[in-house]
Every structure is written in C-alpha cells, then in structure tokens.
Length: 265
Image (spheres, rainbow, N blue to C red):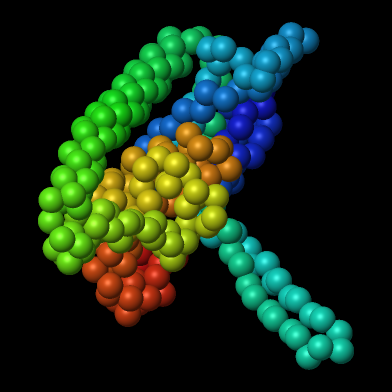
C-alpha cells in the first residue's frame, strides 16, 4: 500500500517503513507526527483519488532527526559590469520514517472540529472588533458636534481676538499625529515578504505584538496562510522581535549570526 501525501509544501510518494527527507518540521526528534493532506491511496489494483484530498485518510510518521542538506552554490555574474556574487545554501531538512497509512477518519474529524472551533473563535473576535469600532465612531460624532457648537456662540458674543485663542483646533489636530506605523517584520531572521504579510493580516504588525506571541501560534498562523510557509522555523521569532522592539539592534545581529536553520546554536 502506498500514498501520495503533501508534507511541508511538497508531495511525496510514501510506503510503510520508508524514510523520507522533508523540509524542516516543528516537531521535536523522537516524536510522532501525522499528515492529513493525502492526495492518493493505492492498495494493489484499487486506487483512490482525492478531490483534492481524501477525507479521513492519514499518514503517520516519526521524526528521526533534523539535519541540513548538501551545499548548493549560487553564482551570479553580469558580463562587462564587473558584477560577481557567490553564495552557498544548505536547506534545513527533517528525516522521518513512515509508520502507518490509514484511511480511517476519526482523528481527522476531531482535528476538523478543532479547526472549526478556531475559525468560529476568530470570527467572533473579528465581529467584536468591528462592533467596538462602530461604537467608537458613534461616540466620537456627538463629541465633535458639541465642540463645534460653542464656536458659533463665541464668534457672535466675543471679539475676533478671543475667538482665535480658543483651543478646539489644537484638539482636532492632535489625533492626526497619533498614526501608528507597522514595523518592518522582514528584519526578523527567516521572515520573508509572504511571512510578514501573513503576520500583518493576523494582526501582528509590530515587533511588540510578535514578541508577546508564542512560537507555536506563529507557526499556526503561517501554515493557515499558506502550506508553503509551514516549514518555517519560528522558535526564535519572539526573542528577535523583543530585541527589535527594545531597539537592541546589535544584540539582534549577534543572535541572528548564531542561528542555524532558524534554531539557536
């Protein structure tokens, strides 16, 4: 019996007791992991094809070790420009062994329920945020009307010199200055444009917010945004974001120099 399953953004044809090298997983060495995105199952002459995945099918595996692949040389040159750049790259990999291939849907159904509960909780939180924004706008409009009313009375009753000295204009100008800007999350080692965009869409647009978030939650956000981001290691992201939020750029650079595939040496 064999299966074609998607693991960390890549598709593999696997059988029981087969060892496979996949992109770096978050699971620790020696622990078991399961993959539900099974695209095809083959058992002798019987072949089952998913649309795109097979409901209830699951592939169980065990993480053997984390390692790095062979070095790949990336050389760039522009003729007659004196431009030459040579870089090396070693992909972060995880070696796993396939322990089981099953078509039962009990575990996957439970997982689907948990995912549905997460989505419902997100929808409720988004609805609460929208309601809070509506309440703020409704409470802010009467305040502006009350501020605008005294201006007309002051202009009629008092001289022009005193009307110029009234302070509501300064109060109106103050909120314009308090515009919060999002931080450049790409300064975190391992966070590319797509990963930074996924964090911003999830509401984590500053270093301080990322520093307060657990690495497991960051990995869940990336995997929900795209399967191509599920292999990114986020163990040190909160620590990097904390240093960036505090303005400790030298310490952040030293930490990033010690990283090996997203893991601190």
